[in-house]
Figure 1: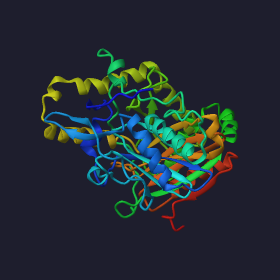
Figure 2 (figure 1 turned 135 degrees about the vertical axis):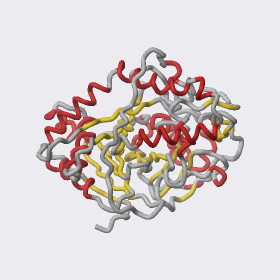
Figure 3 (figure 1 turned 45 degrees about the vertical axis):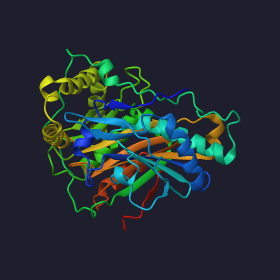
Figure 4 (figure 1 turned 120 degrees about the vertical axis):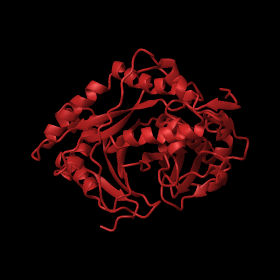
Length: 420
């Protein structure tokens, strides 16, 4: 598979937002990590990154700004330097200190961390790159692949199609909700700090519980999170909305490694204080199922692209455009209480399975959202990872207590930020 070289490239529809709002306090960086069965050897990880990066033109770029738009330009600098993890996850990636790249690779013990500025790719594109990096690393250490090919997986893609434009329908548009949602308040950590609380559990146990409730794993976990938000904020009558990024590739065929997702809000509007878990599970599941259909997703996709295609907007200089984008983002952000993203069930090539233990992901904080969740599974192990800049952990505890009440065995860890 021969990768194409990028001289310059437009940002996709979802990526346009991120450069306008990103900074030290709202980094728009996410992390995907893989845990192996043995400690990481730095020199081999650097060698693997040096070999893999040239094959991925979508990661071998730097971000530039013109008079009207941001754009990608080919980055011919040396790859980023692999480093031992020494800071909190999802910190702002300063390009000038990172050979002008928009991603970083760190390691700690048995774990490899890939952190990505969301302008580059969504979770599918991130996993695509991390898997190839991991395969190459393991081959260097264990000589797994006898053919010495640069590509180990038939699912590895270097496609850079803007699938938003491909599936845009100018006659089919639907706006996002903009009514303010519940905002979780509380004392915050110091700037730059991020608390992680992670629960690992059996996928087969989860499936048993989900079958009992007649819901999917994703529906169950999102609804349980909304239940915990309600349970810990019963006095508040504002809508509880959790933004759920939906991977559009199963609905609109695409192998792009760019962003190709839209946000759907799982909504619950509390009118009293005596709702049961089952009440919320039924209400939120019905809401999600109405919104996650091909027709509804195309409506939202088309609305997003129509804004980008607006001729008046195109003619506005980037400086003024950024001001407008930040204003629009602020309204949209405050319409959601939190975000939960599901990276999905990760599959690896058979020859590498015995070296890989697990995967997990972390989201950075954003305006009005001081707590977020990620779902990631591999084999029979699923991780639900809370990231938060709030000192209290009552919402996380309510979430895991509900799982335990339903008979799910959960092993809980944190990154040492919490002292309770």
